[in-house]
Image (cartoon, rainbow, N blue to C red; front, side):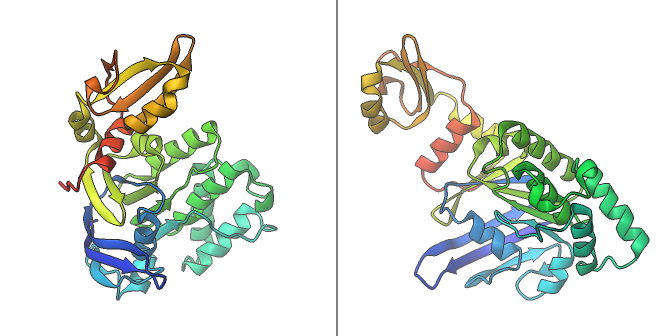
Length: 293
């Protein structure tokens, strides 16, 4: 299974250029799509998901033309958007059965087996008969994954899934994403670096509608080596420091504010080298120029 995007561009009627000649190839893996808000991530996901047309460019999914064969693509697609609607008074099991029928799973036995398995996989079996309006944010997101997996899709798109979740639910959701990635293309689009770091085997970084880098996490970390430093500064100096250097982290301690930054060692007095994290590497890429591997 392979997803190939070539020369994709999209400008909205208000003049916003959301995608600018973007090209990208994704194989059967957990693929992370990183970028700040407004980078074009959701525009790209919606275009791949056949929810909007591009102005130019092509997308193929294992030989299918996403632009012209939308019905065929939707048969092998699972999609969890940032916000998705449900019938709040319906139970999870009834809603999944309803959606399975809409997706073409007509045989009652096959449908029951599929729905029961997804409820178990997403840890919703014990609350399957409760109305969706009673679900917590994390439970609703896990239900979102369950509905996205109906019909055993070959491509799963997950857009900003952990925004607003508490730390425990975020970890649970990331573990679930890792479980479903075997044998299919899974694209996780987010601005939260830790989500991608936990699950993705390959990462693309968008900025201003353009693809600025594609690499495995290890390569991003290798490039960041020697460019990450920490220094201790007085609290009164934090605002000045943030204006002077790209800061990737701050921690207030008894001896002052521990500043983590990328760039040059001599930018701050007393700076010491630090082991890079993916957050540091991501910051360096977004500060730099276009570099696509």
